Image (cartoon, rainbow, N blue to C red; front, top):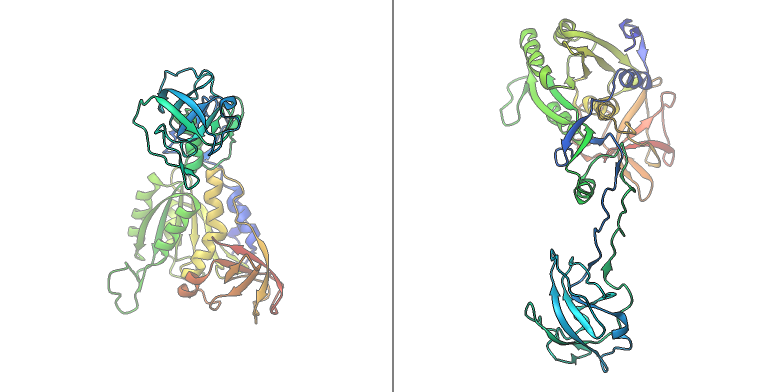
Length: 431
C-alpha cells in the first residue's frame, strides 16, 4: 500500500484509491471443495471432460426403437406394422436386438438397443392397442409394461430421430470448464455429469461488516432523540453477498474505543476482509482511527469524489487482514462499496473483471451542477433498451429512498460542472 496517504493535505483521485487497494490484495489460497460447497467460487484449474456425455446412445422420447427401413412410407392410412419384442426402461443394462420387422418399446433415457436406428415417439403409434387413428391422430392408450404384440406406426421415422448420441454433448478430452469460471448451478450440474465430486477453487471471501456510531439503533427498536436506524450494516452485508462473498453482519458498535477494539479483534479470526462505516471524516470523533492505530496501519485519506470523500484502507491484526473504512452516510457508504469494496472482494476471489462495466447512455433531463474537481456519482435509472438514463432523487448522501429506486450510477467527470439533456454520459449499471 502506498505511504503517500499519510500526508493529510493530499487529495486522492478515485482511480488512485482503487489501484492502491487492488495493488495490496492477492487472491485467496485455493481449496479442494465438494462441488456443492464450491458454488459461487472461482475454479482454479481447467476441468476436462473425462467421460462422454451422454455416456451411451439413448432415447429422448418415450416410444419405440425401430429400424428406419421398416417405417418407410408409413402413413395414417397405411401404417407400418411391427412386432413388439420387448421393453427397455431407463437404467436397464440388458437390451434386446431389433431385427427386421421388429421394434422395442423404450422409455426416455433408456439405451438404444442394437439394430435400432431411430425412435418413433409413442404419439406416432397406436401404442400397441390395435386402434387406428382418430381425427387424424392415433388413439393412444399406454400398453402395460412388458406388453408384446403388434404396433402400428403412422409416420415414417427418419434416421437417428429422437436418439441422443453418445458424446454428442461433450467428448472425453474436451474442456468442460476453464480456470476462472465462477461456479453456478449449470456448471455444478456439468461437474456432476462428468463424475467430478470435488474441484479446486478459490473460496468465497469472508467479509465482516461493522457499522460504528452511538446514534445507531437496530431496526425494530424505537430510536430515541438523536438516534437513527442502522441501515449501513444491512446494505453493505447484502452488497457483499451480492458481490460473491460470505458476509457476516456484526451490526452497530457504539463510539467506545474498548468496545470497538474488542469487537474487531473478535472478528478477525473469521475475516478475509473487514468493512466498516462511520468515523472516517476529518474532524470527526477519532474513535475509529484510534482503534485502527492499535490494530495495524490504516491510511485515512480524502478523495476527489462526491459522495464518499473520506475513505480509509489498510491492514490490521496479526495476519494483516485488509480493511476498508467507509463514510457513515448511507449513500456515501453504498457508493464507496460499489467503487472500492466490490472490486476488492472480486480480487480476493480471483475473478475477472473486478470492476463493474461502464456503459454509455443518453441523459434524459439535465445535471444542473456538479462540483468542479470532483468525480460525482449520481443515482440514476438506466434503461438499456433505450440506452437512456434518468436521475433519481438529489445528490444528498442521506437520500436512501432515492437510492432504492436507482439501478445505476451516473458518472460526472471531474472537469464537468453541468450536463445538458441529451448529453452522452457514462453509466455504471448496478444490477
